[in-house]
Structures are given as structure tokens and as C-alpha cells.
Image (cartoon, rainbow, N blue to C red; front, side, top):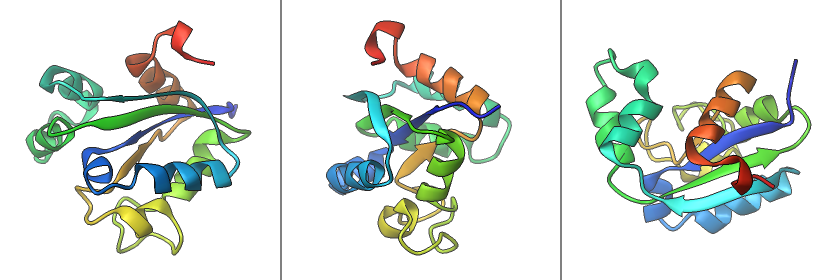
Length: 139
């Protein structure tokens, strides 16, 4: 069953390159409502936990290093069919393969530095939102 919330992060490269406003504008224009948002920075322990599913992959160390190198914008978004619609809005992980007009096509520079994270399932959206936000921070 599809839920109406998803989780996203504007990753360190998106923040460093000054794309926070443009990305949030695309999110709003696509009909999403922001129900929680904060500028924060992940610790090494945070990143290792958040991306634990990838811990056996060869890129895990680089991913943790990348995600802890600077600030991120964490947000919970609301819209009917939120997860699927947001995945379509952000585009393919590889910006070279992302559809025109998607966030990654516009703002990502590589597969590794792809500007934004989007939950891949309703279950993960709930887990990821709870990782970054307490219940009283969700509106």
C-alpha cells in the first residue's frame, strides 16, 4: 500500500554547490508539501548506520566519507504516492542516465555525488524519516 510520505536529503554536494533553493523549488513545484526539514551534518556513526545496508559494498567507505564531509538538508515530504513520485522527480542515480528536467540531471555531477537522496520504498521512507526526525518534529 502506498503512503503519502517520503524522506529526502540534499546531499553535501548539493549543499556545497548552492542548490538547496533550486532543489526545494522543484520539490514544491511537483506538489510535495514539506512536513519536516533541517540543515544538519551526519557524523561518521550516523552515516554508517543510515547506509548500513551497503556496509559490505566496496563503495561504503567512500559513501560514508562523502556523506560526512559537509552539511545536508534532511526533509520529509508529503504527497499522494510520495515515494514513487519523488523517485521520478529525482531521476536515475547516474545523472548521465537521468531524464531531462529531473533533479539529478540538473544538479548531480556523478553517480557518487548525485545531489539528493530519495527513499526507495514506503517502509524505508518511514525508517529514514524516524532516523532524522522525532515525532514532534513532523508536521
